[in-house]
Image (cartoon, rainbow, N blue to C red; front, side, top):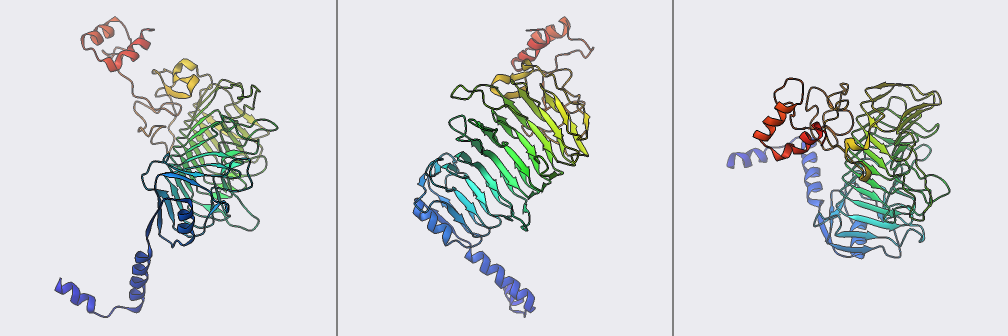
Length: 431
C-alpha cells in the first residue's frame, strides 16, 4: 500500500491528470433518486444529471396538468424500483384528451424500463429527431391515440441511431385502436435499431383506413434487426419501407405473426393485411418467420422495383409470398401451405410445432447469422435447421433406427416408457 501511495504521489502528465479528474467528477455526480409521486418524478427528471437513475416506487403516476414528462438529460435511466412493470403505471389523461405523450425524449443514451405507460392522446414514448441509443426494456405500452412508440424525422436532421426495444408489450386493451392513425413502433430515419422479444396485440383500425404496422421502419431507415417478436391480431405485422419511402438492408427473423380474421368488437370486419411487407426495401433479409392467418391476405410481400437484392428463406406460412410491382428477391426453402394441426394451438396464436412435420424439421437452408430460434434455443438441433421460427427437439420415435416407425418401435417405447414422449408417439401412430 505504501508503495502504491508513493507511486500516486509522483507527478502525472497533465492530460492523464485531467482525464482522472473528469472521470472522478463524472462518477461522483451520478446519483440514484427514488420517487413515489408524479410530482417527484417530474422534478427528478428536470433536475437530473447525466448518468443518474430515477427509481419509481410501486403506484400510479397520473400525469399532471403540464402533461408530458420531458427527458432532456443524456444517459438517464428511468425504471421501477421493484422491477415489476405492472406495478408502476404512468397514467395519461386518456386517448381522446388534449395532446400529450407519456415521455418525450430529447437526449441520447436514455433508458426507460420496467414500467407501464398508458392512456395518452399521442404516444406513450416519443423522441425528438436525431436521438441515439434509446433503450426501452420490459415495459407495457398501451392505449395511445397515435403510434405507441414514435421516432420522427425532419429535413436536415441526422438518423436516430442504435435504439433497442426489447421484452415489451404493445397493445390496445379494447382490442382495437381509437382511430386508423395508430401503430406499434413507428420509426423514421432509424439506423441500426434492434426490436426483439416483444409482444404486440390488437393494433387494429376501427375504420376509415388501415392501421400502421406493429413494427415499422421507413423514411430512409436502415440496418434494422427485428427478431423473436410475437404479433397477434394486428392489421399489419412488420414493415420495412412504405411506397417510395425506403428502408435499406436489415433482417427480419424468428418472428411469429398470427391473425384470427375475427371481426372488430363492434362487429365490423376490420382490416386484414400483410404479415411482413417490404416496400422500397433493398437488401432486406427475411428468414425463419412463422406466419399463420385465418384470413386470406398474403403472408409476405415484396414490392416496387427499388426492392432488389432481397433474400426470403425458411419461412413457414399458410398464405402466399407475393412479388408485386417489379420487386426482385431470391426465395429459398419457404413453405406456404402450413396446416393448423402442425402447431400447438394455431387458433390462439401459439405457432410452435406440435409434432415433427417431415417437410419442416431439418429442411431449412443454411443461413448465416441464424444461431437460435423464437425461444432462443440453439439452431440446428438436428441434421439441419427447421423451417419457421420454432426449432424443435422431439423424442426419437424410430427407436431401432431402421427408417420405419412400426410395432417394434412401439414395443420398445412401452417397455421403456417415457411420458414426455407420449404425444410424439401418438402423432407417429396417428393418435
